Image 1 (spheres, rainbow, N blue to C red):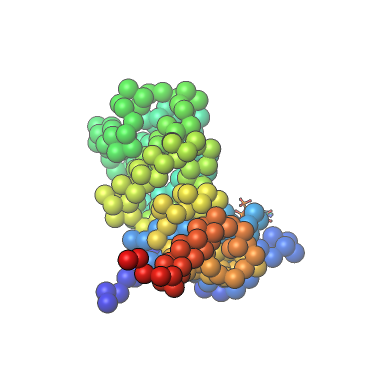
Image 2 (image 1 turned 90 degrees about the vertical axis):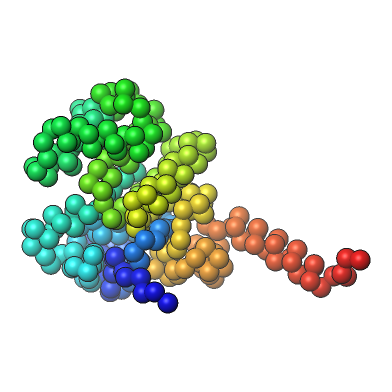
Length: 268
Ligand SMILES: Nc1ncnc2c1ncn2[C@@H]1O[C@H](COP(=O)(O)OP(=O)(O)OP(=O)(O)O)[C@@H](O)[C@H]1O
């Protein structure tokens, strides 16, 4: 079987805020090319873990490795390299309200200080096209965009540097079911086109089911289960039982139907 490398490796991670212990001896790995979804109750430390993977927060103890490099023990050039290979879609989009759509997407490109304005213009337009935003919206301010458009523009900005690794924090939060579905389709297309590895946090079961290759469940300060939806949703833990309630019910129905078919009289 082909060996798929880990893009992210987390070992023995502890996180504390004062006396409040959020993570204790947490371990997790993310494989190249997969979509891994983090789920957990409110306050279980999903966003904090995401921020630690991004290098925005440092754990009290433990190792976070990205692209084979220690996240907290590398020089400036390596940090910049990791940052340029990583994109983030924050929960509320987090566009700069004083910048146009164009300038928001151009920002990470300009920060490289290696591209001229013509190239930046072309790259921004390509990204807008990728997320199905018409060029006429490029010079609008974020305040004049709909919720669905803000998500798309934020995704375009997250993809500006053609990252290999993308973090999605509640990508479909605040979208109605139709917009949410179309945003999920867009993420799946991007993943295929750009060969992305994705780490996502979501409370939305539909988004989780549509996107996840693997799921990691955070509870009791650690990752208590990882695996495919089928493997994880039957894990015996109160959080898993309540979060995956609807899916477990459906599975039970299917099992019962299969069972009655198997044990019942054969159709003549
Ligand atoms: N900077 C901070 N200072 C103090 N406590 C913090 C800080 N950041 C997070 N916490 C605490 O750490 C815990 C985990 O927070 P985090 O936001 O990571 O949880 P979460 O699983 O993402 O929750 P939710 O699903 O509600 O967004 C919470 O109890 C939170 O109050």
